[in-house]
Image (cartoon, rainbow, N blue to C red; front, side, top):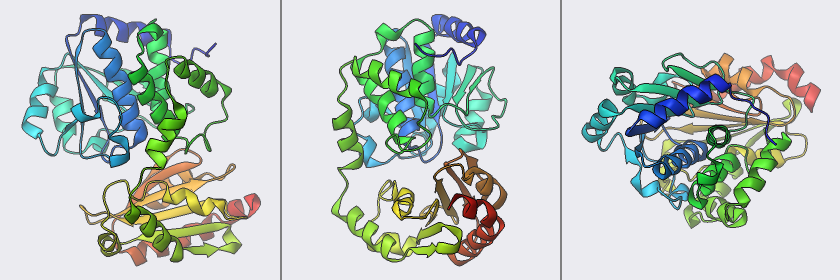
Length: 345
């Protein structure tokens, strides 16, 4: 049995909305990851089973290793089909905002979502949600938005309507947002949910292979290069890897090729904190990815130094400046957090 995490009043409210709705739009954050796509498609498959006209719209492209997911070919990219997407958003009865806590996380799409007369619901697991939706389902203690979508559907009384395809998407979101169930995944209810998803006929081993073991040769060579440039800080029990725009070009970089790189330094004995700095190929900024083990709060460091946030062991942020400046800020952060890092080392 699952704990009733989501308030009953919110379940009842959303159920009434869906009962009355004909057109539903599902939106998620810029640079969609496995949880964004998994939760969105998981909900999309459910709504389809209820006879609703549903569309998933995301700000921009998502990684190739997620394109096997059932329904992914029907996802609308806002940066390519803005006019059509704006029309769908404006005409929606309900808009479901998944896996983001602030309207700026959907970038240019935000204005259209705010302007739409549709009823809006936020389903998310990040800290400090903005209140731009009528219903707010925000639970930072839950490992993924995909898990929240599963809980929502079940609490609405529709577990039997979750299809194998929907279950595959939900499982993928849960798996990717916990690094293959290696962090933020000690809640035993996660494994009860996995058991229920397996009852739908999913092949979790095959899903793992599709997500983590179907990369290109270029990705492996890129990984080797990045690790050869890695800097380890033994006194701080930390490691830093980075990737400039020029370096990405040398390895025919495509979106998603560096997925998971930030986790690799954590396999070094004594390292409890890892940082990955990647120069964005579209904007003049450095993307920050942070991972930790144990109780080191990389989300606090992200908020203080990189205008970011996230979860205890997995967070991120942004830096507007050069790669060298970003490295300098990271090293300043290491000094500030050295007592905590050494306590965990």
